[in-house]
Image (cartoon, rainbow, N blue to C red):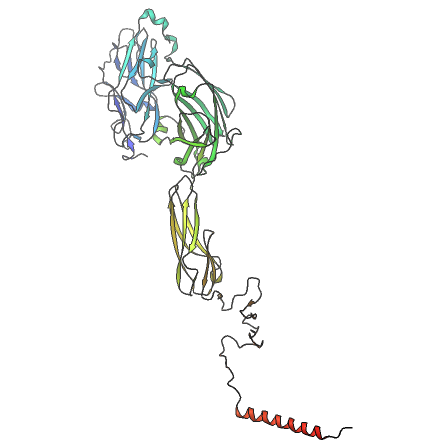
Length: 535
């Protein structure tokens, strides 16, 4: 619901000499009315739900009030949202009650508000509606709060309704007679159904500055998920308009798929073909809607219409979400989210939804080696390359040692489109080893703790091929649970790593005496052998 900080106030007041007396022969109206033109023209709130925005004040003057001061509205109603556009149809009716014909129009100086009928603006004499006897026309409001300040009135000025009663002799030249049942003059508009996803649009007898409204009846773009509901052409200066509209969920061959730097998700495509100069139209409004279930968790504010430019690129068009009150007063389905996109150029269009694309651009370790029990820092640069704000939780993981595959920590970041930030994770290990660190799958490098060979069970780490790990002299380290570790000099087995190593201290006296005795015996035998006679 809108709040006081986000809403503008729309209120206008017609001040006229009210009278409930009618001229002789006037139609009998149900209820009270404000009258003018010698009581030949009567103004009343409309019978439909939007008639609550109009009422007769204490002086029997018609008042149009879309603000908290309106006694017909709920106490929590605060106005219309700033930065939006919308339309409120069938607010009040103007009825001609006499036997002649009358040209009726409204004058109003406000820039943010336009009085409209089903066939376009009714402001100024050039847009007058000709009413026959007992004829009537329903009048609504089109508002544009872009640039308006919150909490202010869009228009506090009075508006004036003019009725120029025509001469009976010229009545036969009036656009509508008594049999017209109140229809007003204006361009002839035709919308032909050419299939579920196609429409043929045509308008003729268009007057300069007219607004053309083509009701496309929920033309499918992506089945019922995404539909084209209406096309409005504002400020038309050509006498005739012919267009065809085609929708599809798939890229059109002549335009190709939607490709933009922020990579939004395409929801559907709309192709328009036309036989007029686009400069003959001041602006086109594309009105479409999306089923709420199909939209899912996507923020409606992230839905954007793109136009394919002449150079093959895709340009975003101004796209707005209709607020809840506009949807309600316009009688639109509340099961759908309604949008309007505005463009001054015609082409192929794509409806797409921006998403956040938050990811790790790079990651690094402050130190590549440290002792067991010490700590260092892993940093990661995170950016949002998408077109929507988002939030993501990043996780630091380690492969190797006792922490193989373990999540060591996490950080949550919230980023606007195009924004980046740096996150830091403290990291340290109590066991020696080599640890491969990564932030959300992006490698930060390998951290060596201690001598880099420790493991969680007290054994040494084997080489990556599963065999023994060679040492610097060409030997190899065997497992500590049964294999021996060859000495680098003579290949003898070394004692276990947890036993003290005793080095020999040299020959003692007993060992020297024994050795001398052995040498004496050998020398004696040599002497005997030399004395033996030779045969």
